[in-house]
Image (cartoon, rainbow over all chains, first blue to last red; front, side, top):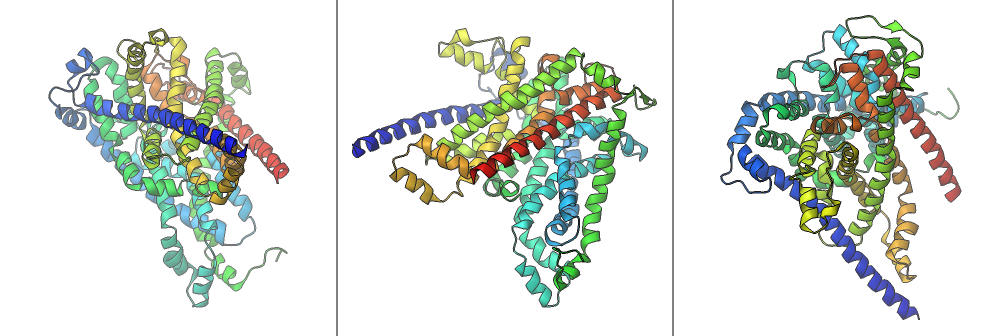
Amino acid sequence: MKKNTNKISLNYSRVWKTTGYIIVSVFVSFTLFSILWMVLTSLKTNNELFQNVWSLPEVPQFSNYVKAWNVLKLASFYRNSLIVVSSSVVLVLVVSLPCAYALTKIKFRFREALSNFIILGMGIPVQLIIIPLFLLLSRMNLTNNLIGLIIAYIVGSISFTVFMLYGFLKSLPTELEEAAMVDGSTPFKIFMKIILPISTPGLITVSIFNFVFLWNEYLLAMVLIRDSSLKTVSYGLYSLQISMQYTGDWVSLYAGLLIAIIPIMVIFFVLSELIVESITLGAVKG
Amino acid sequence: MRPGLKYSIVDREKRKLLVPFILPAVLLYLVFFVYPALRAFGYSTTEWTGFNKNPEFVGFSNFAELASDSFFLLSLRNTIIIFFVGGLIIFAIAFLFTSILSSGIRGKRFYRAIIFLPYVLTPPAIATLWGFLTNPSFGMINSILTKIGLEQLARPWMAPEYIFKVLVAAIVWVNIGFYIVVFLSAISKIPQTFYDAAKVEGANEFHIFFKITIPMIYDILIVTFIYWGIISIKMFELVYSFTGVFPKSQMWTMAVYVYIMGFGGTMSQIYRLGYATAIAVILFLMIMVFVISFRFVASRRESIEY
């Protein structure tokens, strides 16, 4: 009797595994095929594309990439995005790590309340602040200006960054700090020499999230930036996507879209194990 | 000194850092985030037709007008469908894929990486790609359906009655990877002995998944539900990119409608900043009501379980 149930469960398990394998494979094939199709399309001519969307490029048209880079202004979008996104990602760490440290490792009266108040920002949609923020920044002459966009990106990322680092720092033991303190180190030195190095995995994880999120963001960019010479990659691509209805130069758009996802792909494949390892950082300990 | 807060010498030394450490983040947050958010509530009670004009107080008439604005009601419905139906599909598929991927199949890391990939793609790329996939004459979906003999399932995907469903499908495709990665990572922390014991008892994969795995990752589930609630209600870029490729208003969500009312978007020359802010206030309230009520429900269940 016992043996029997075991056998059924074994068969069941095998059927389940095979079915599961097929389902996941179909899904994964769809994603892989989509990316591959984008790459192939970006190497065709517009004529080839509209004769047959499934055909392979006869001669790979690398000139599409040159055109996307120069004529479609990807070069300029790219420069702006790199400036805006990397400074935002770094600066948000500069203000958030000390703040998260204070909220987890320094005892003071309204610590809990202040933590909740900052983390509450994660629930405030950017749509709520966008009109008053535009007004505030335009009074400071910071609209249509990359600095204004950087400020908007920093403040929009503070809550999430503090939340993630809060979870990370909370899991660190305080003994290290205390030992160093007994040795006569000042608290600031301890922060720089002990806390900063051991926080590196947390800092990298949260920066990856911020980078991907800000690289793909374009609501704030659309509202705060007017000149096309100041557009960021995702905003620029959105504009190009709209203009396709008139120009019809799809192959160059695909080349541009692929250029745009390169930094994300590089981060993704170089750091994917790290992302996966620490993705639950905030979730587990927060 | 208050009871319960005992400061050691170390603590007192560290307290010197408190103000310089907290001030930069808190000041930036107050000036450029909290203050605009508070101002928004005031602006939502005004009629305000452009940044160069003055807002005019109109009380709650924006909110009254929203109740009969058919575009708003459609955007509200779409937002709720994305949040609720989209969320159900995402979590159902994420559970299914997580249970498959954690049952020891080969190539788990490769699958996980590819499933996660759409989550990081730039929204205009996703919208353009899906525009081609769902094209009624040459799109991949109809071509494949025809090839495998299911042409009766082929649809004019870009027609008004289907595009919103296409959008929800794309949102699912983009988002499930994130939850699968989180769940897999959480599951890898469950002690193997639990599973061994269950197998000895003769439990099948389904029982194991729902009786051991789900309860063990309960806390993370709650966090991911809340996360989905927040990001799905305020989701903008992906939806707005889709409205550029497909016919438009059938896909508007509240997040998109705020932008269209306030800044005209690509299709109108209407600038109603007070009205747009009123929509944003409702968006904010929806998120708050969801987060607070969900935390309440989740914490009650927790206390019953243990």
